[in-house]
Length: 472
Ligand code: GLU
Image 1 (tube, rainbow, N blue to C red):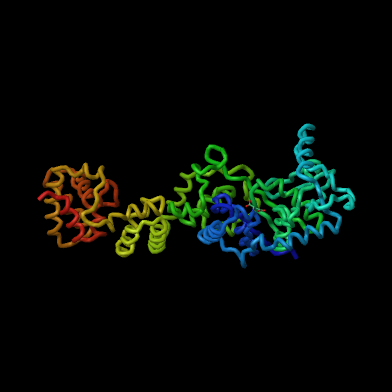
Image 2 (cartoon, rainbow, N blue to C red):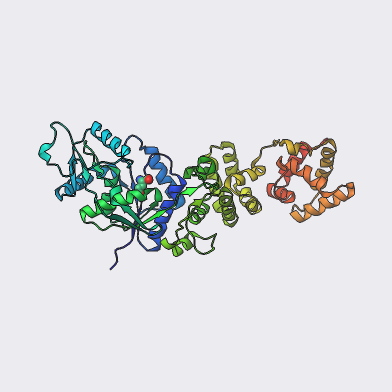
């Protein structure tokens, strides 16, 4: 029987949860879900100087927001240091590792010699075969693993294929420091083993580490998990992803008004494909996900594409759901007034959403587009809109108001008919009536259909806003 699939996401909590890491988590999660396996979370907090509690929280929050639930409790790597040391000592007992007493000076000299010989700086195995009785007094040793000195180490990778590392390029690296703390290389292997991880999916910046880690697996006689090293995300110009390109934390995308379903869909396509499918649900991704679908070429992050995907999900979402997201987003970005307005005008916002959804690419745009609903009189008129409110236009608004006031039926059809007739009587094009109305009612030059706006905010509010701008 094949072992049940176990994947893991192993972020270091040293900064925000970067979208590249979120994508790694997504692939690991999707693979586990596709196979009915487990997706585990391990916080690699061994770098005590750089690991922070807010960064740990950002990982939990980011994954939760994206809907990438992990199974069981997260593993905290630092708490397992004793177990890591135990394995270092076990490797020592097995003759697969040894104490090294080199001083900093000796190591510096080694590096210098290697450089002079045109070789990569590496440990020369000085203590590999030396008798421990030669150990200098009072020096706390490190433990180094015995890497093979000849032959090859092969990483059979699901994305990169067969990657061969020459043994001569790998040195006997440290697994336990002189203060008894494990190195990253050891901790990862011991944890992956103890957590029964069957598939490691991570960035290809870890490919060389994979070769080193295999040395430890072999030393312990443990099975090496399947591996898939995915190409990193690049900017649209092919350069390393920078902040300008979108290398932001997951939380930032939430604040910018992206929906988690859009992020999942977009990130999935960034390095994975299923035929020509661009838009798919989370369930479809789970159904379709395979390691074979992971792309070998670097993915390019494209903000415009992400926006379009987001626009799609905004159009597809139910107003009730979007309303909740709008409130949460407004709260999160500290828009108190808007937030209060959103709450007080819930019914109007809900009925306006079908009008607004096709016009917005982000939730922030949606909040902004809806501002005409909760704007407080006298509403602020933006300068471009104010240009529409000439003396003639203000006089015209007075007439329009009188016609509207007299309307027995406050519906889009009735308002539309009345305003057309009014424009005709005045010898004006409909736009000459509609644009000043828009300026008076929304303070903007762009809004949903202006007659729709009137119905949405209701007759009394519409007349009052028009009255605010009409000349007496
Ligand atoms: N903690 C490592 C990182 O954040 C990942 C380790 C791994 O996936 O093996 O880059």
